[in-house]
Length: 99
Image 1: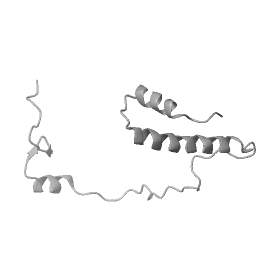
Image 2: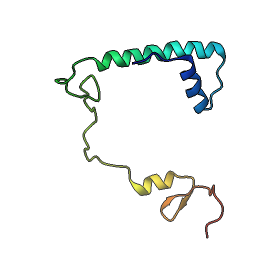
Image 3: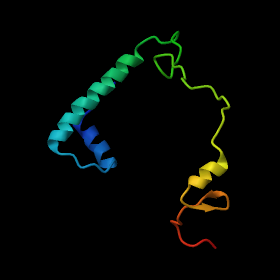
Image 4: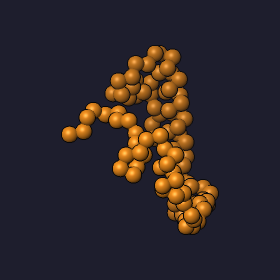
């Protein structure tokens, strides 16, 4: 792979509509060159027998069981509400009038 030039970085910055100073162009040229070198190193590895993974560690979902339990009494809860409309909690309208 050919080395990344300062002009390459300037062109990509222009295409992305980024305004970079000379110092930033020098910095990013070095950084992006190292990233591309690393990608080349990775590409050289023989990974034919490596199983693709989405995560390096086995993950276990920790959730509680979906067990039925007694719930609150509807009439008791609505009796404690500041406003009830049609057997539901009443809340102030926040968007214009309904049609």
